[in-house]
Length: 392
Image (tube, rainbow, N blue to C red):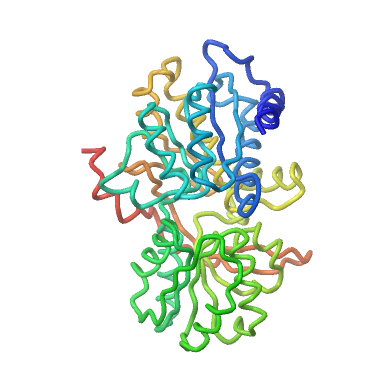
């Protein structure tokens, strides 16, 4: 395992033209994500999006020679903590990125903060790190966990649905998901179900929700969980009977590749879509497809934007980037265009950004993907920032 990881590091360093290990002014980045087993599609897309951005930036971040150390967390908290220790002590990383899962991010956070290593998450955004326990070493470049669910909840409310059944996995992001949906949906919740993280058979849950007779179903299942749930929901004949809604994570391109037409017509809330019409996004989508032979997912866009944000902070910090107070201030003040459009951080180090509702459609060439239906929030901030005292 260690030799495999070392080879990945050497290969990526050579690919990106980074300086030799030990260079005095090199930036050392730990990219710890899920690269095997269930959920590996999410981590792979984050990594590939990050890699593509670094290539677009000329092989480095902020013009600083860059070494990227990759490792697989296997979606296990103990493995994530062990790899975090190794990256800090052996690889001497300046910042950590890549994390998909909120429970792993929370397990890693104490070690990173204690060692004064920046944690710039391209996905995991647990509420616990957004409010009273916001942390000067933690930044999220994607969203706070509730946000895409809030967008979907606002849309379901706007469409006039009154009785909704909710499902999510039982871990921090799942709990945040349903809290976010309910923050903007004002109707009746006729069922609220939390299932074990990693569960793949939903026959019992689908039978119960059918019996509850809701007007609509909102669910949050990423990766393989989402693939199985959508397939089983469709096979049960419910797609036309009870409309299905979710966040972008449950209708991301990695899921649509596996689910196919079973997802057609479903709506989902997102901060990004492949059809957003801006120059950065057009280049990203075209080059990602050329480079990797597939349409990018939401996760790939977040990996790409994370690299752009780090690059902007390094350039703003200039020659003093290694001074961690200087780099933190530069990161806090980042205001740039990304694949999703304008981006900036709130006082709690989570984004302020626009959110959209997308629908799953079939393009003329047969590709099943998402297209924007409407902008549902503009300059949206998470509900927890008011409790964060970092900016006081």
